[in-house]
Image (tube, rainbow, N blue to C red; front, side, top):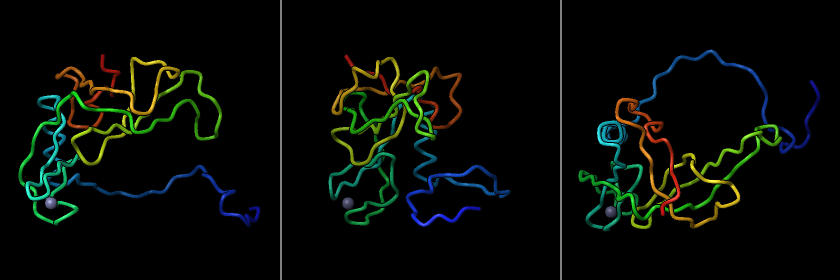
Length: 155
Ligand SMILES: [Zn+2]
């Protein structure tokens, strides 16, 4: 094996590690995914003391540490692209078909979601562009973030 003197020269390597584990999404996460599966809506938890809503929902407010027990739907209107990325694979080579990944934020909610932007051409994508979530058809939802098809430009 060659010696690497500069950490920035290491980007990735292929391999596998045999591990077995279960990851729980937690109480607020479970509520989020159940709601997404059952209604196609995105849930936030709200701190009434700080008047902040969080998505994905949190159990505790990051400002005042209050336990958050109230959940609310995040309106489809108000989402926008915070940042995005397209087009290259992990080796840095261009993809044949560009994928558009966005950090989607909502103007009334703290946090955001990472997901695909569909029904859009990469040349038309801009930071701040208004978008809306697109849930899959109900019979295809399984309780995963992939119950969203992604986000699409809003008209
Ligand atoms: Zn708070």
